[in-house]
Length: 216
View: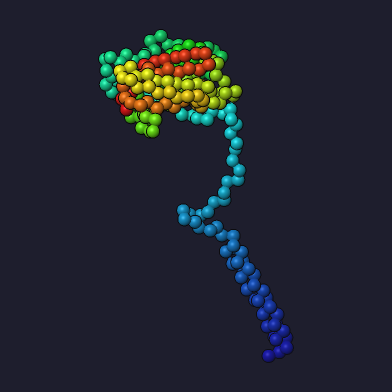
């Protein structure tokens, strides 16, 4: 073989060696960059940070749970309170002139304290039972309530059984809820037993009562 041919072979070998090195580096890079499969597919990067919710934002968006009064038997001796003369909130109140139609309810009370009652009256059933009794969320409104200044309103609710000796007290403070019904005060109650109950709320200098049937 001529010297020129040997020089050509020697020149080709370093090029091939360089190509193999580049190929190996490329494979290593692809292995490092490839996403690692997890238990449920590819691992996604964690979310960085989370928005901080100001204390004035309503702490709940729960809607009142209304059950149809006709779904369960109401004793004739239990005279449910019905909103036969609907209350219209003052224009400056954070509430619509009437509750949304699908609540099948009207406002009941005064500008200082009102609530939402079904046209047929309040019948509570299928309530969860806890240590304090049958649990229910009650919603109340007031032109004197400003969620920005009072996120935990000083509202309390009591109950008096009209067909028995049961009583309960839910002391202040409550919390708040906001939805299509405006800004409401929300406080949970524990009803000791089923029966006919007078529910009374006290907020500042206002008091409001209504009669509800609790069937569990």
